[in-house]
Image: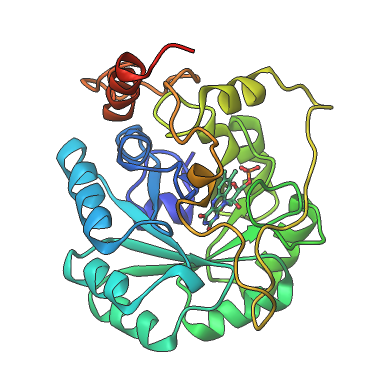
Length: 286
Ligand SMILES: Cc1cc2nc3c(=O)[nH]c(=O)nc-3n(C[C@H](O)[C@H](O)[C@H](O)COP(=O)(O)O)c2cc1C
């Protein structure tokens, strides 16, 4: 399927994988880009040195375009400078507005800036800030979410508001039928998170993937938003590392539905898997 999005970014399919913090690391990003979509790194929890390594790992695996995502409040000027210096093709932001100076710096370095929004008003604001593409996130979407509209209600309204700026639909899209439906509503493609989280290449716990793969139409549910809204409120309750400190497993063997990037190591051979196996060997018996 060709859209303005596939044309502009030289893609085979109008699909972007969401920049999920912790989950969307180099292996997933490279797999999506190599498969003809565009993978986006979850850069929010990464110190600049780690982000640099991840960008290098993507580039080592594929020469296709990719992006880096930030929740703006976790982003420092160093992250922006790194993306600009390394000529990252796409930088996307969510939850808070990025600094205008960041948008200008990225544009000057040739990057496209994407912003994810949850309403028509936010979409107009993103365009005013200089967004080259807007992601319309409906209430079905996983992760941070403050939309009050269903994806397929929000998408045509955002498209009408900001045309000709390209729009990706986000929330509840998990296969080609969903992508086609989004395009029928005027979107230029889809920004997909949960489906990719269930992939072998995603850095998520195996039980999380198993719950997603096994879930049916009644399997969903939504908790309270994990971050306060922009412009105030308590500091975030889940700074990087908090999950680990609370004793939750950080890594799981990749057991999702494999996307299939040729030449990549299979499940059980990733560095986190090897580290975990070492920990198991050295742990005292219970
Ligand atoms: C586990 C998880 C983590 C996420 N983390 C981020 C993030 O760090 N930055 C971001 O912009 N969006 C994040 N999102 C939201 C996605 O950008 C996107 O809106 C959502 O995944 C789309 O809906 P879907 O999950 O139904 O495909 C996350 C989503 C999930 C499921």
